[in-house]
Length: 237
Ligand code: TMP
Ligand code: ASP
Image 1 (tube, rainbow, N blue to C red):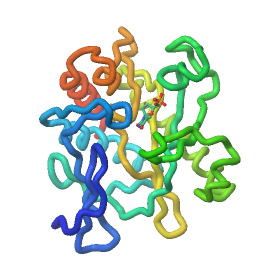
Image 2: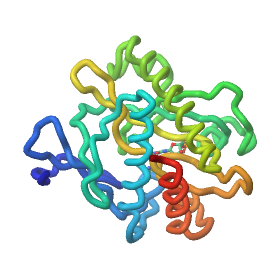
Image 3: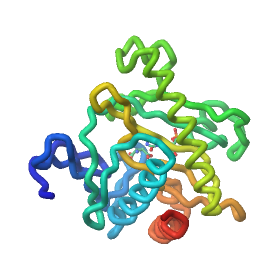
């Protein structure tokens, strides 16, 4: 499959058109950014590490009945995905307090959240991805009430499957971000699931094995991402 026109370039990925209007190539870049691109770096091999991780996770989710955009991995940092019309929302699920939830609430980092929570953010770089209150989501016209309910249910189901999977890898799934898109009338999981978009803590030591290592200069980012890749690919089929 050949890459044709560049359709979109974000901080971490490029989407390319192909000769099939229903399929795109999603390419993972080596760039590392945080805090809305304020902190920038790059890491050789990061694109291929994240592509390997997200391909394995999407394949695993598909095998558990989740409808995703993933078709196949075709190169170290490239995968073929279904062409979705993305919904401009970031759906975040949280199992433990960390990051912006800690800032917003003052609750201690690592506190378990009894019933996992789902939050919706407006995906907008200019506005810095603001958190949306329930009514804002409909005011903005992003989704219908039925679609909202579907997204919430899908996000919680994905949380359950991913949480169990990461637990087998010895990792605690603290929180993560999902993006969905439309394929006809269906809503399908798109984007990526990687250490860029999840918080993962070692179950035994509590060590952070995700982008927080880059955000807050906690250690060697490359070895952390490689460790997640090793654990994920060891368990997945
Ligand atoms: P937060 O605590 O900063 O709101 O982040 C929650 C989770 O969402 C964390 O696992 C990182 C992920 N995330 C993204 O993937 N992209 C983003 O732009 C942000 C802000 C968070
Ligand atoms: N995803 C955002 C960025 O890459 C924010 C973050 O992850 O800290 O800039």
